[in-house]
Length: 208
Image 1 (tube, rainbow, N blue to C red):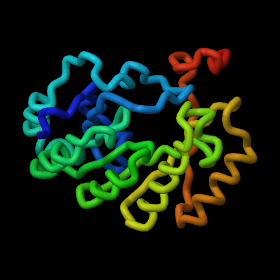
Image 2 (cartoon, rainbow, N blue to C red; image 1 turned 180 degrees about the horizontal axis):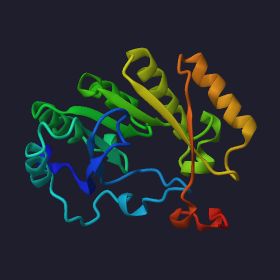
Image 3 (cartoon, rainbow, N blue to C red; image 1 turned 90 degrees about the vertical axis):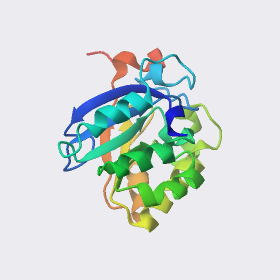
Image 4 (tube, rainbow, N blue to C red; image 1 turned 180 degrees about the vertical axis):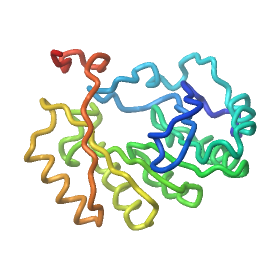
């Protein structure tokens, strides 16, 4: 039931979260990882109180039909919620394209969502073997890289991003990430910096 989608934030208009489209962004509540550089810690607890209700957001989006091109589901980690698929279906029925920001931690669920998706922004955090130092979760890298392989094979428009903190990702690792992505058929990697002001692990905070 889509009303059970837990939403922790909402951006009614953006031109940067879905390439080439005007979009709204739904920030889904909850994430099982605790990435050290995460700056959205309020979205991590799955059951945190929130003023947002999916039914009200859907009504808002209905009124933006023809004005916006797409709705992007971000997080948190959207694929952690089983209600995501039905929410995407409702958005598509309103005539919007559907985008997804994901860390790829649930490749089987991601595979089931492929028919709903028009574009995906995939966060690759490190080489598979180095994920636990960032996420705090053993073997977390295997799932993300499985999702990269799945999306590359599916041919869905894809942007792969890596958030780089200089203490966590060396230039040599960055080069190897690019090489392994290229082996999957992914030729472009967007490297973005950290917002260390609010990072979960304050030991990573960088001076101005």
